[in-house]
Length: 244
Image (cartoon, one colour):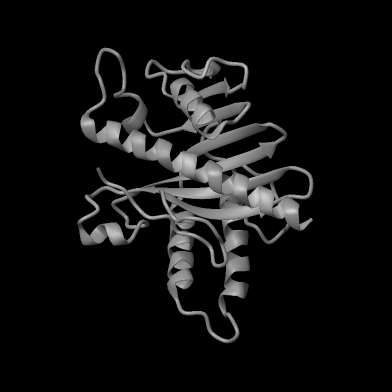
């Protein structure tokens, strides 16, 4: 099965695994983390797999709002400019650090560009800065193709799935079982999962027309990437709280 590498920012700790390139923004009141998942289009044995941001791969943005005992997770297709910034940042991260690290200033610029892209997707509040062109302020994307909530409570039967409900669903009904698996796997008391996925991943996965093996594999990799993003985000929030 195809897989890819976790592209991590300089100075991060812990094992590197999964499908996530992360951008962390800890707000004063509401803490949010933003991550980029790259799903490879080829086998790991091919040279193209060495670049997780290759054009033939599929990229998704994961935006996580960290609340007390609750996570709100939104997943949608990544804009091209976000992918390009992530590609550049991954290259910089692989470069040997100089005596005076030149990446710090560029990292700040990349963070601002990622925030701008998230604003255009409607995931962050609009900036009042006049230099941002008005056309970039138009939100795009959807709140959800599917939206579900799952609750993993200590009192529940460990052999059964967590409690859950579909808030908005398609015939594929992808978000509910995925949110239940993620909540149980990571022990999240309450998980809101919003999926804004392209029809190529959703519309073909129905009871009357099961998803082809390639699409099933992509959904498995996407779920794995979301799990890695959630773990990375929770770790970043915990580290931020420990420093405060």
